[in-house]
Amino acid sequence: MTHNIDPVELAKSLMAAPSISPATGPVFDVLEAALTPLGFTVERFIDGIEPDGPVENLLAVREGKGPRHFGFAGHLDVVPPGVGWTSDAFAPEIRGDLLYGRGAVDMKGAIASFVAAAAATPVGAGTISLIITGDEEGPAIFGTRALMEHMEGRGIRPDMIVVGEPTSVNRLGDMVKIGRRGSVNIWIDVPGAQGHVAYPHLADNPIPKLVRILAAIDAVGLDSGTDWFQPSNIEFTDIEVGNGATNVIPASARARLSIRFNDQHRGADLVAMVERLAHDVEPRAKVLGKISGEAFLTPPGDLSGLVAEAIHAETDIRPEMSTTGGTSDARFLHALCPVVEFGLTNATMHKLDEAVAVDDLHKLAAIYRGILMRAFL
Image 1 (cartoon, rainbow, N blue to C red):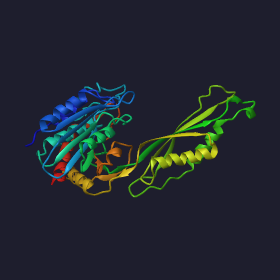
Image 2: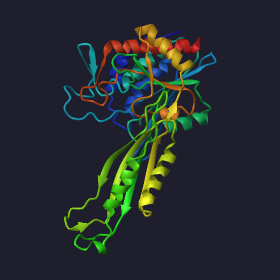
Image 3: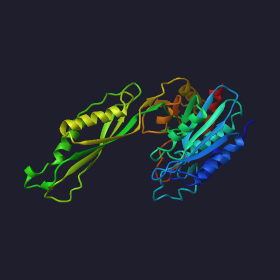
Image 4: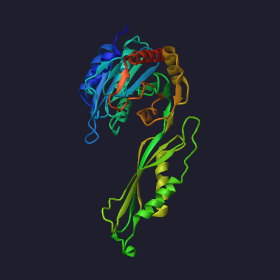
């Protein structure tokens, strides 16, 4: 038995429920109401406290007779709309061939398309789960990782997962993500001793030390890339002293840097490298690193193959397999099973007047259904 769900109408209903990250409440009500009639058992829970929570998460599972368990992961939270929209960001509106509203492509449209695909897939063909968080656009502390812990406690483990991030670039289906680089932010604080610029022997200026540290870091060449990953890069994102006086040597100087790294590195090793370089110049320097995700790769194989086949069958496009871009919750989910990302075109995500082609929502639903049917063959 199958059902008919219009992905455009469901997307509009999801988009009409404001869900700025971290999200809870009405938007999850909309999704649960769509899933329950399809035979899904829906579990919702709230985790975390302010300022990074509370976050609502949803796990929906429809048991099947087939041996495979297919998981779809996504997020219902969105970034703030900003000022300057042509129409209300949370009042979805079709103008011409496009559906406008926050979350259209990132990623309520993809969630709606997958629900439509699941509705059109025979019950019993295989087990389907939706792993949906309200905290992907934010710190991602109480979102997908909490869902994974919940799944482990329930003994739920998919055989493969597609994350519905907007991976397409110019046309729906032209790119699939099979991995992502890791990300680490590092703060460096160099102490000194405040004093008068006319009496430098009575002070200790931290700025030259910080400059030497940054020069040493800038001279590091991490790697030249791999078959699937571009070279790792170190970028300085802030230098701050906070000295408003022209005749005062400051007491400290600080800098921040971000490293996006491929699978030749681990975040902790990169933090340790920066710490060594800093201590070579100033042993008292403090270094703090925060790793937001490690690099991972799902080598081309069964999962990416069936995704590519489903895309080609619907669009006649052979997708590029890529690891470019920022991070996503796939950085956590790859610990469970093979994971790839595939979704709508990303040209308007996070922008004013975010929009998706109405036809792309129907095509994506058909592609997702093709993926499900191939997974369950």
